[in-house]
Image (cartoon, rainbow over all chains, first blue to last red; front, side):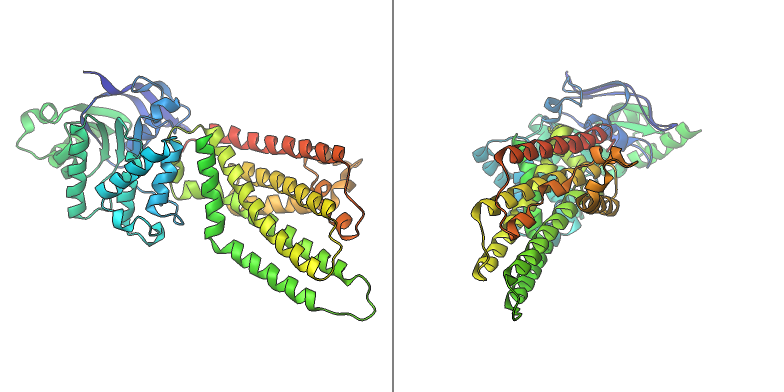
Length: 242
Length: 246
C-alpha cells in the first residue's frame, strides 16, 4: 500500500526548544489516521510542516511523494484549522469561490462543487448571509467546506470536532467515513479521544515532539482492548514522561 | 495569475464593504459642498481655494484609506488564522505579497477616482478652469504615488504591527512630501536617495494655477521611478514572508 504522508526524522526547533524531535511516521492512502497527543506535544507543528508553513526544518517530509514546499503537493491537500475566523465581510458562497479561485478551478466546475459542498455541510440555505452573523459551529462547517473545495486526495484536520454540538459531530463522522470510502486519506489531529476512537483506522501518539507509538487501533491497543482509548492514552503519555 | 487576482479582488471587496470609505466620501462631499457655497466679495478666482481644499481632501483621504488597508492585510490574516489556511493552498508566498499589494493599490485607486470625479464635478460647477490634460496628469501621477505608498505599507506589514506600520508609513510620506528636497546635501543625503520622493508626483499647483501639463518624458521617468520603488518594497515584504513560520 502506498503512503500519502511520509515523515522521516523530522526536527523543528523554535530557538533552543525542539518542538519536534526526530519524528518519523507514515500514513497509508485511503485511511483515517488519528494524530494524538497532549497540548504542546508538537501536533500543530507537525501539521504546519506538512502544509509547507514551516520554512526551516531538518529531516524528510513527503506528501504524495512531493515536498510540502511544492505547490503541487499543497494542491492535493485540504486543511481544516482548529480555529479560523474567515473573512467576515464575505458570505459562505463568496468564501468558497475565493478559495476555489486560489486553486484555479474552472468557473463552471467550481459553481457545481460549491453548491454540493454547501449542501453537504448544511450551509446552503445561508449561503448569502455574511459570515459575521455565524455561530462557531456554522463557522466550523464552512471551514470543512473550504477544506474540500479542491476535492483533495488528503485531508488534514486540526481538531475538527471543536465547537460542534453532538449532532454536528455525528454528521462530521459520517462525512469523514464517506470521504474515506471515496479513497481519500484523512490525517486527523485531536485530543478528544472518544472522537478519534470512533473514526480512526490507525493512530499515533506524540509526546514532547517524539512519537511514542503508532499503528492500527487494534495493534496499538493490543492486550489493552478492555480499556478505552482515553485510559490507554493517559497511561501511555504518563509512561513516556517518566 | 488567477490566485493573485483572487486575492486582489478580496481586498477590493473589503474596502467597499467596510464603512471607512463611505465615511470619507460623505466627509469630502459635505466639505466640498460647504466650501462651494462660500462667497467673498472682491476675492478673484475664489474657485482656486475650492480646488486647493478639494484636492487636499481627495489626496489625503485616498492615502489614509490605502495605507490603513494595506497595513492591516497580513496582520489580520495572522490574527484571524486565515494566513495558514491560505498559504497551505497552492499559492507561492511571493504571489501572496503581490496579490495583497495589488488589491490594496486597486482598492485605494478606485476610492481615489470616485473622490476625484466628485471633486471635478463640484469644481467645474463653480467655474474652475479644468484643463483636461493637467487634470488627467494630476490623477495619473497621484495613482503612481498611491502605488508606491501602498507598496510601502504592504512591504512593512510583514515587519510591523498595524499601528506602527500606519504611523511609520504616514510619517515618512508626510516628511518626504514636505521636506524631501531639503535632505539633499546634508548629513541625511543617504535618506534623500533611499526613500521615495512623493513630492515628485504632486501636480496640484500646476492644476490649480493652470500652468499646463508636464512633458511625456518626465511622466515616463516618474512611472519608472514609481515602479522601481514599488518593486523594492514588495521584495522586502516577500523576503520576510519567505522566512516566516506560520
